[in-house]
Image (cartoon, rainbow, N blue to C red):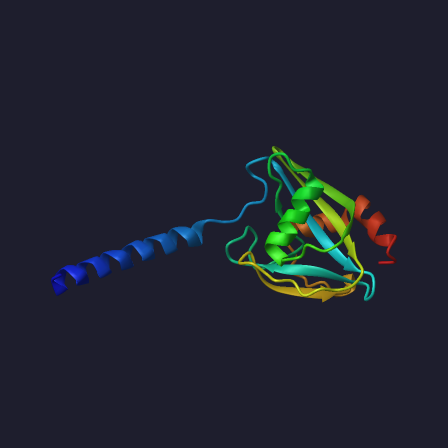
Length: 168
């Protein structure tokens, strides 16, 4: 094959890769927009009394904010099933967890269910590309830059009742 032809093919491949990269950087991960339902889990470790939150990556809505792990509930799933699947996808956790609904945020055409997920002890999450960091922390030391909807959910009367039962 002529060298000129190979250079042309390499240049074309680089242009395609660059275009794909630009498109991907503009796609934001949006929980549950297909079904109108999303769900997530705020983990609480019994042994330490600390909560697990994740730092959202640039690919997500509200990037560089801290929130629970969660996303879209797929057709045929309950919110609990969807939340557990999302946690497995985003944090690599598939162990035992006791779920309690803290709050459901409702907007036109979309509902997000926030669960408290109690586990016996802290685990090290295996993050996917939707999160860049994680933190096990007391609620009193949550960072200021929380996802706005997650912050609202934590202040709801339902969530406050559930969290008070933990002594928080």
